[in-house]
Length: 151
Image (cartoon, rainbow, N blue to C red):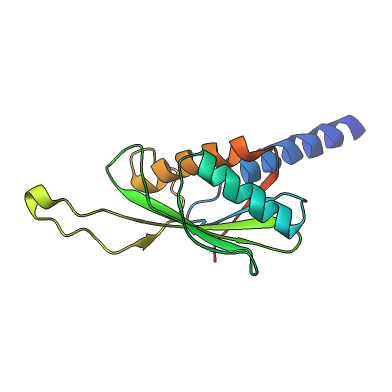
């Protein structure tokens, strides 16, 4: 009986851990990276990492540890997105994402307003495509704990 309880707890721990790190829950709209670095070190490292991975930095405030990237095209769908990042004093990086359909002059499409990103597990939509791209970016930053929130 002890072994059964032990395996049940171990199984639940592994399943729950995998869900929180690898896949957010549906409609999560905030990503947290818990770096365990100082706020300043996490801010500088994250900013450099973004630059090394093709992001431009549109706005940055080293006093408040906040930055906003320039837009980046999605790998699919022809949409664009940008990241809004804030780093806490304890080194946790909070990421919010905005996306839109950009103007397309050939057909006189003016583009859409920016939408708040929300995770969707469906493979055939822009929210999932953005999540895949941002996940690659985060995973290449280091093996830090990742959490997802709905704010």
